[in-house]
Structure formats: C-alpha cells, structure tokens
Amino acid sequence: MTKERSRLNYHEKLRRSLYEFLRDELERRLIKIALIDSFSNFEKNRVHYTFLDKSELKPKSKKMEKESDLINTFIVIFCESAVSRQFKNHIRFFPENRVVKDNLEYLADFSLYKRFHNNLKHFDNPKFLNLIESLIDVDYALLVQQNPTVKKKNRYSLTHFHVKVDWPIADAAESLAKTLRYVQSHLYENGDKEGRLLQRKLFEYYGCHYSVGGRRTAGLIAAELLRRQDAISTVYVSSSESRAMYKYSEHGVSKFFLIQFTRKQIEELSQKEGIKADDLINTHLYPAGRQFVGVFEAVYTLTPHSMPPEDGRLRRLKPAYNWLKLADELLHPKTEDQTARPVGYQWIYTP
Image (cartoon, rainbow, N blue to C red; front, side, top):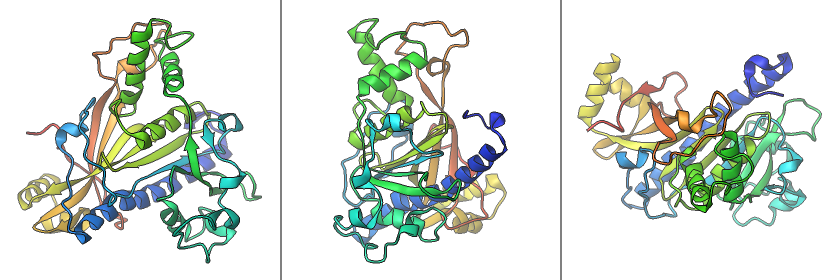
C-alpha cells in the first residue's frame, strides 16, 4: 500500500476516508481534554494559568514552563492500519496490555471498569471517546488501530493501553538522516559532532528543542518509527511543560494551545472576517474572567533542508538552517461547534 491517496484502490480510499473522519472526531475530544479541561482545572483550583509566549512557537525555541498536575497529559497513537509486528520491539504492545476487562481491573481509578464490555473499545461505539478519556491519564501511550481480530472490515479499536515507545534516539535520527540523504550507512559516518547535531535536528524536525522531556520525546520517536509503514498514522502528545498538544501526521507538525483575547482584539478580528464580535465569541471563544480564551493551532512545514534532495545525492549538513517554518495560524471553533470554520489569525510574528 502507498501513502498517496491518488494511488490507492477503491477500498483503500474508503478506508482512508473513514480514518480521516474518525481522526477528526478523536482530535476534537483530545483538544478538549488537553486544553479546555486543563484550563478549567486551573480555574477551579484558583491557580494562575501561564499562556504561551509567542517566542515559544518559533522554531528552535527552548523556553519551557514548570510542569503541573492540573494539565491533562497523554500520548495517543492512531494508525490507519494495524501496526506491523516488526515494530513490536519499539512500540511495545502485548497481550498483557490489551484493552480487555481482565487487564483493566488492575488499573487504579478506572471509573468505567464495572461497565466495561468488549464493544466499548471499538470506535463505532457511541461511548468510545468516553473510554479514551477515562484511560487518558494511564502512563505511556494509548494505541488505536485497525482491528485485525474482528470480522468487520476497516473497524478501528482502542487495542492497547500502557504502550511503551522504546527506540533509541540515535537510531531514529539515523533513520531520518538516511531519508534526507545526510548519511548513507550510519549516523556517525561524518564524525561524532555531526552525529550529535543530527540527533538535535531530529527534535527540530518534530517541532521540539532537543532538551524536551520524556513524553514529547516518546511521541516524536513513535511518529518517526511509524513513518516507515506504508499506511499513514497520527500521534498526539499533550505536554505539561509546553502547555500544548502536538500533532504529528502525514501533513507534518502542528501545535495546539490556548491564547487570550481582549475585547479590542476580538473587535479587530471580527471586522477583518466580516462577522459580528458577539458571533465570533459564541462560536470560537471561551469566557475567562474579563477576557476570552481560544484554541489556536500553529501549523509548520518543512524547509528544503528537511526534505529529501531532488537528485537523491548525499549532502552536507548545514545546522544553522532551520528545518521547520511556520506555515499557517488558525483560531479553531469551540469543540462543540459543528458549523463554524477555523479563522486565520496572524499572531506569532506580530508585535
């Protein structure tokens, strides 16, 4: 199978369409959990919430906030096909962490345990996203994939919880460097210094500084590993120290986070979009004291230095050149709104 939709057969295109629709549904719920619910936790506990500074959204940014238990953190891996067995040594899912009642009974504070039944883990069950939310704070990752054990074709299920991502950073960096033609045989073929620089560039490729914590490291490692499959995949990572949710997909890197709006900013944006300020508030913003809060997405794209060269030849690493650049900025509608569209809003590079 190929990742390019134009090269899929009819049944594969149907599966791709189903996957993309379900991913949208999953993403809406994860945005709510990672951002809106976390912000509510701060308000309920009367704790100051630190919004991201614009500098934190620029490539190579190092700034990080202190971690907080009030932020809902997670890794969710959603694969278009079943994860290949060849990756089991690195994305570790086994019978003992399958989503079945006998395994779930050992989890503390799993509220749905007594009401759990096997059909609940399938994406087409109306309560599936509730199951995701109830398991979201389990350590490590949740794995949603095509379920090969059921008769119904193209059925997606939450198959495993407590999934560990265990692939050395050096191996992931070597895999990416080979793809981009910076090395031919191994990571250190041009010396130890360049090998270390390529490991740092791996993090930059996925929108992180190389000093980030374990959850974001595991998420980007999983994304790099799953790129080696023919089918597409998406990795969502909610991080406390970044106060953001990262999305890694076939489209690249996105960061979802909260920003504050004053009445003046709302008026300016509503005039630009040709809509009433109150309508913009009703569809896109949440009240937060005297101000308002919105879900913002920064979309990044690759630069020529982070794409395979057209001639396929080996090339020298130029570490000073960025591997990511900002491509788009979107203010998203409220997660419960089904009619409003995202609004383009240039914020990160404005004074």
